[in-house]
Amino acid sequence: MDRRHFLMSSAATGATFARRAMAAPSDTVRVACVGVRGQGRSHIKNYLGMNDVQIAAICDIDESILDSRLADVEKATGKRPDRYIDVRKLLEDKSIDAISIATPNHSHTLQTIWACQAGKDVYVEKPCSHNMFEARQIVAAKRKYKRIVQHGTNSRSGVAIREAAAKIREGLIGDVYMTRGLCFKWRNTIGHTPVESVPAGVHYDLWLGPAPLSPFTRNRFHYNWHWNWNYGNGEIGNQGIHEVDICRWLMGVKYPTKVSAIGGHFMFDDDQQTPNTLTTTYEFNDGGKRQMMVFDVRHWITNHEAGIGGDKPGSTVGNVFYGSKGYITIDGYGDYKSFLGREQTPGPRLHEGGNNWRNFIDVVKSRDESKQNAPIDEGAISTTLVHLANISYRLGRTIHFDAENYRCTGDDEASRMFTRDYRAPFVVPENV
Image (cartoon, rainbow, N blue to C red; front, side, top):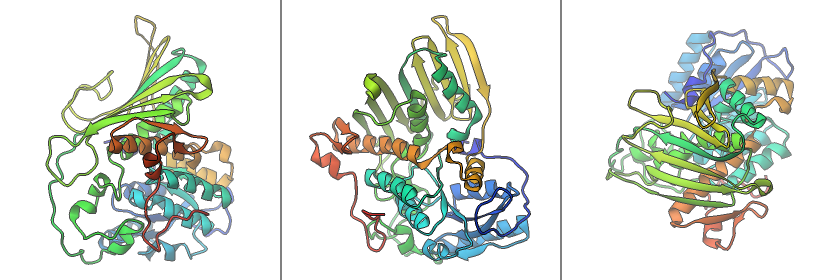
């Protein structure tokens, strides 16, 4: 269990469906779910629990997964959604109001841009981009086409975590000088898998999208793509982006000025390219105030920290905020606790989740972006912290980031890693 599952609404399924032209508070939002094997199931579950949403279409490049999800929705609602394999065909349907994207990381930005260009609102899973260049382009598309784009950092809609943010702003723990993000997940080896024929019903060229043409192996496909640089961003870009976002959000900072990451792929001999152990230190200087953030990824047996993770062995996912008057812990399952003074006297605490998909639909209907909890503008900034950590790790050195000019100062090699070579026709455009 992790935050994204905890924060899912448990509202009853079933809906009354009505077709709509433009968003109005009393109308039903017609949503298409894209990429539905893993986290995409959570998208479906949440929308099924809303009586003002119709899952009008489902799209996936694996036809066996696609047909299974179509059957699930038909069983729950009595109506079978439209079936699509290629998201570009889906976007031609003018009756679709919004798309909800849970495809692999390397497709998030391009599919979001296409959707904005087609006049759709978008819920896009974290991290919203595969690289630094895409983080800017996804925001540019949202602004140009005036769409609602929600980032899948579900914690932004968590009631307890939003209260913790308010408490920090009010000065509960004084001057916050440092935060730690913890992402300790028990992940076993993925082993080695051979090149093989593409499975029947899998449209592999569409799955590869912007990435280089590579032979099919199981470790480049379902879920294990997270650990391949061509498609994923490692654990810091998988579970870790949630905690990265919380650290930055509650500290009240944007871009770091200095990033240093060290780690490696330890213990296992397998096909994983990304590090399974990584420690990244960020330095911020927003408004002349120096603050730091330390983010730890661990992949195997480890201790819990600061009470996060409970009293049973297993994953430790959360955050610790250190201030001049105390500290606050945030557990990955949706609560916060505060400890005040040198005596660490227990202070305010709360355990309550929320629903990021519900917030998205509410904003789609109202068009009031001031009520949006996880706007893509914020998600893109947090995502750049993931990319900067990975760039520092891969180069083996500290990098200095110039946010105003969006480059690494005095380090052209690092700046060149902000983008990639795109495989036509799946090219993220310079001008959206």
